[in-house]
Image 1 (cartoon, one colour):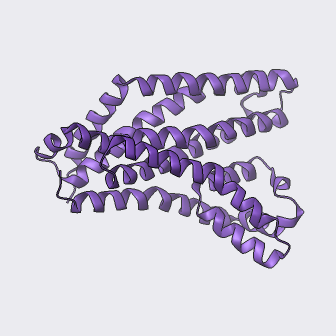
Image 2: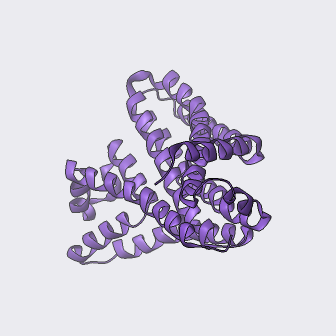
Image 3: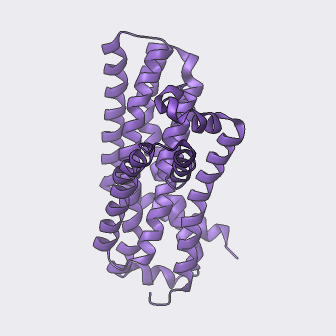
Length: 279
């Protein structure tokens, strides 16, 4: 059984350490500044204050989110367990009356709170600019976009803790995390483009749908694009896939798959960490 009090204690410890570390402040400042600049100069430069301008700026923010958030989440999470193994502090922590499952869950919650606070702080300035330029009409869409950004960060944080559990040194964990980011964010899209170039629609649509479900970053991209009414982005060739994803059942499937991407790596990390005896 997992003791909630122990989980909270570990989460508080991880959160306090994150708040004292430089990565949280640096990430918050950089992310907030970039989001603010994209929002301000994007809307001002186009001279638009309506929904079209909001959509274009959100699309630019989406690119920032898809590249930066997974990388930050993977790096900080992967160094968590592996870093404490290397430093020897993990052994000290495990001598306390706390189970290994509680350690993983607590670390995840603590880092998740730190990441969420940074994202909200970063998007705060951008939200003010968007509300100023486009009015409060688009606040619901913007809040949904922020929520999906947080979910994306937490998914990659979950993956990073699994990486941290299966590696023994910080350098190994960070290197593997960057490799995962490189494949899932950069290489994966080239694979999807290759599949999309196939001529047989009956093969392309199922393959692309399978590829979509196997990459949380692509699912977040598609959900944001569909919410902003950008179905034409997918082109007439993929009209069948677009219609499938735009339905209520398609949205539910994408949402449930994102939830599984969040839960399964964390559950695997808890399982593997609980079975290891060399701490």
